[in-house]
Image (tube, rainbow, N blue to C red):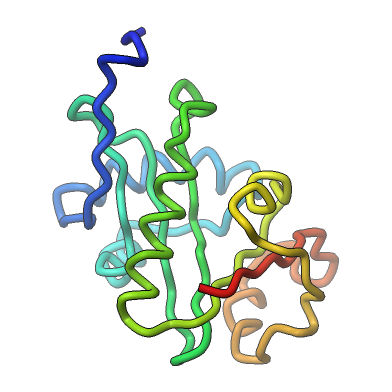
Length: 158
């Protein structure tokens, strides 16, 4: 394990060369129903929405920011390799999304999550899922847990 002082975390836009690594990173989380399954084609189709975290040249995490309109975007597919968790990588990825979204003029961001404590530490507040716009549910309907969703909705003003 690298000593924390020598760790170099770089957040950058994902590239086509990252697709296989993103897929492999997301797969175990999707298999455990923590995030929605994404195949390689879906990752390619949404590649411009992904940020990745490189730690000493190796992909350690990824996140996707999906814009629904001028007032709302979603942080989704946030994943950090298990051996890289608890080092602030998730926080830096979310901050990177927020900065990018804010620069585009988006005013509010939300997430559907099982890890509410993480998002609350980032300044998010728990909200009712019913408060989210209807068009968001067009994604949720593809989830195996749609009829019995136990994720928590959180949002933050940018």
